[in-house]
Image (tube, rainbow, N blue to C red; front, side):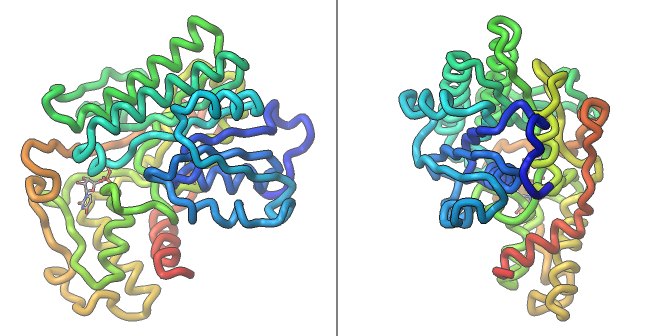
Length: 351
Ligand code: UDP
């Protein structure tokens, strides 16, 4: 995916990425600049990090392909700024959101307000200039459904409002409803993507994400903290695959007005993930990365109560049904988890 886009190959060239200094957004910015787009990122750096986009900011014009890069450090609830940026773009990837289970449990006000108010602001401005919007939603909206794999048309099953964890799912559902309503009622081109667990360089463990947490712990020689009994599973998709999915959907006129799962179908338990992180780290270092080679010393089981406080409900499984995006665009994940883990470990080591 390098070089500039062929003229006329896509209806959009000027791109706005909200939350573009975040994990997924910054990789998307890299890919689109490399393809020759004019990319503008708006991010208040609340959870995003400047260093994620620093190479783009500091680069000489044209050195990342034929595209260009612009950055606004601003909240997307600033209507004046959002209005101007939206008026100057052909498509918006709306990825600004409060993410990470830890943040949600600790700061539900920020979660709800960031997610709902930001999406409202983006959709209002998009309608004014009739700009296409791809909304980044989350697999969290499926809640604790036990019908696997999760299909876009499945019912969702959320817990009570007294448990703040569910505010994340509910707020992202409001985002989805709002986006789909702008499409149905006002004719705005909106696409909703539900991102499942994504992994890759630049993801931070600060907000609870398991892959960077395990890698950080392993490289510091600390035991990996497996919550519960470690039999809960997730499907991790490499961020490069996720970025490709977002671009392909945005390029697909038939995707408008619809919801798509984006994720990998390959499931791994958290205990196996911990073992794979340790094995990959050992392989790359040529020796056990944490002092001991004994699994009892390298993996620590932590009760959920200690990790998240009382009353937290973890999802035992999260598996996407990805037939819809595949049928629509031909997309499927390509990067094996082993490769993703190796890349994350190398990036942690500054390689
Ligand atoms: N998890 C874990 N140890 C950690 C952090 C997370 O065992 O240090 C578990 C967590 O309980 C969950 C899984 O890893 O079962 C994925 O957690 P993450 O927060 O990355 O994603 P989500 O729960 O939103 O799918």
